[in-house]
Image (tube, rainbow, N blue to C red; front, side, top):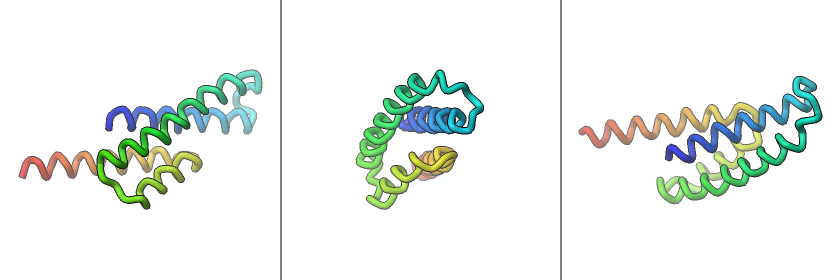
Length: 96
């Protein structure tokens, strides 16, 4: 799960960087580099979300929400909070 969380955060940040180029905050000179890195992270996010959903036995709806979160700006933060909540619940259930 740590790998999925890391990829999720990196993909979300790279998406925000791509959007900042669109808004003119970052020079268009970096578009090809940011686009390539974001594309690799996007594919890694999709494949790791499929792997994590099978490993954690999440429903298809959860998997579709993870896919949707990859195209909505700042939704990667919701994914991080959701995974953090699940890990806390898992730790509490293992203690009892």
